[in-house]
Length: 538
Image 1: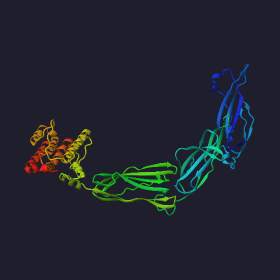
Image 2 (image 1 turned 135 degrees about the vertical axis):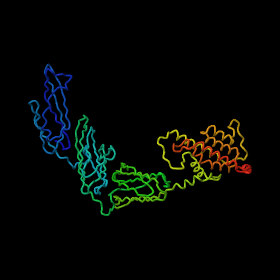
Image 3 (image 1 turned 45 degrees about the horizontal axis):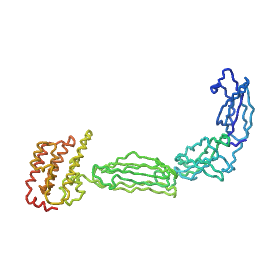
Image 4 (image 1 turned 120 degrees about the vertical axis):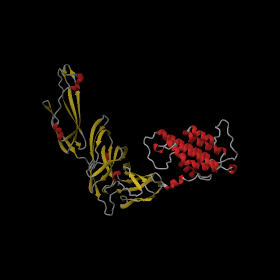
């Protein structure tokens, strides 16, 4: 007599005939026929099969036996007959087994193995998250087993994380517990029945380690699924515990020039929904800004409260025309399942200012700032004098070697260093004594001679000449400012001709001559009074 969820073992034994071909050391390869157990499968589930040999030859007499052990689980209640087992013309006797119904009144703490289920809600809206937990309690030594996953054609089941293993007392009995948690999302309104779950496993029982099999089954759970309420007016039904939307920008000021771009990242996050349930966002139509969206990214985060779905959309905004543009606000209607009311997640509108190229062109013509100019103006002017600043838009050559770009960068840093040296505070008005061993001060005639000898190094020589004039106070600040302002456009053209693209090539000799002429004209305008007043400047 057994319970319906308990297993039994059937032992079938017969005499083993050993002939002249018997090989004691290769017993497992003997072609021994199997008993006919087709009648067992009608009322029993065969969980395990084992075969054993016992060979005994005493005084030339064969006393060997062979046995088969079958682990059976009854398929129904009541009296079940194990039929006679036939083997090589011999049959066993039938055995009657009484299978009683599982006693549902037995306290769970008194069972060695049992299942427990739990849901957080029994009435929900369609597509609303339900948390379903199933726990296996066992007080025996678990050898192995299988617990099937829940499934239903009208619901989506997602297991949250890995199963947990812990211990818990039920009454005075200590049990080991295996717990699994699922997030369920009903697809249709009506009644959802979470089907029964079945656990089948083997355990070791008693001091002698007897293996037993147990099968436990949960009870079905019924959940009422309601359609979306009439008060909800949104286009997409979103039942969530919370929902938020926010954005972030590559430039927080949201102010760019024509031709520049901004990157906007919009994140939508909802507790109790999957990322694929969140709606896509429509791209605004702006006349002066082009918008290039990237493919949206959705993902799910698992935690104790279920799932949190996120959707991220990245948009690149490229300024086409100057002006002030407003991105419209974004509204996402959703249903608050905690407070049972309609809500809206709102992302406020954003204003983007696009500046034209005219302001940059005016800055390029601004004269050299005076001693009281702030650091920002000086940096802007240094960038305008850099080698990479183009007077006209141009198309970059994709075959431009890397070393040319690095050379241009080094020249830009050289110009910035020279300008910072020129703008340093004057600590004293006395002429600087030329240190021994340094390069001699170059006069204008030496500069002209250098241009004839090595035209490719002329831009470097001009910088050195200007620096020496500043250090030695050979020229006044007014004259140096006038010279640098006059030669700056031609010097930039000369640098582009050497380090820029093929389209930037100019006549090097012509540029050098224009620079020398501009310097010579300003030197003629240098007055003795200006040089005498130079020592009075702070």
